[in-house]
Length: 274
Image 1: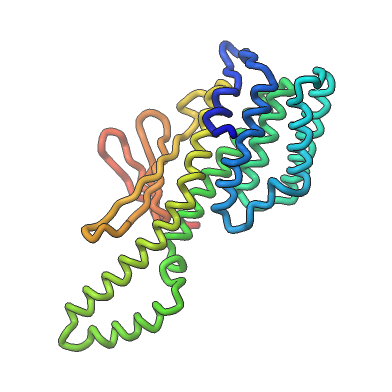
Image 2 (image 1 turned 180 degrees about the horizontal axis):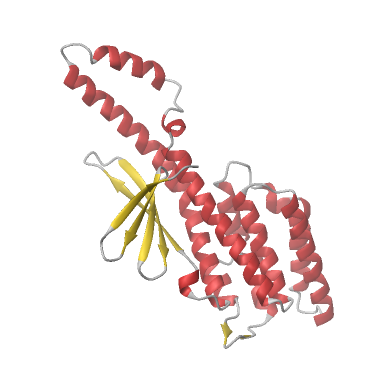
């Protein structure tokens, strides 16, 4: 099975406005070989990863498999690629999940590239990259929101008990107890978010590298980094998505606010309204 890195290496570079032809079969094999990576990615989304097993997407993959066969002539390969691209766009019309849309857009982009349409391929890759990055933000926003920290049905009753408990002479001990409860709960929620974000972050990096190989300037393609902070009790207290914009500035997104950070050290905080 291929990895995301294999797909990057199989994608022809654009040098001086021309694509360096690495062979269509190698790119097709790499794209088809990332099925395992795709299943891992989809497995961390709310819906089951049935996308690869049914419908127009599955039919499109069948056309790609036929196009990758050594005995397939050039004209036959082009017809299979056109059919595959049509299947993927049909699947897009019925999909609403941003990460799944991103995965479908990646397949359309590869078809367009193999059909000799690098400009359209870059446009589809941009759509794919942006959709996957938005999913990273959505996961973090959900985890850090009030709903994410109160999903446990026992916490409401416990909160009332602790409020009553801390109104007594043991106020300090009660606050320490509640702080530990909330820290543990936050750790659980944020670690779950990190587990979901890690394979998605690797996929986002792949899309960025693909865009760069097709000739887009580095300053026009943002880079996303996921980091986390632990407190004195070794609980995860914060997850940050850093968006590197250009050469001088970055944006730190915590799920609740966005902080513009200059490489010179200055920063500005902006609360996001979603």
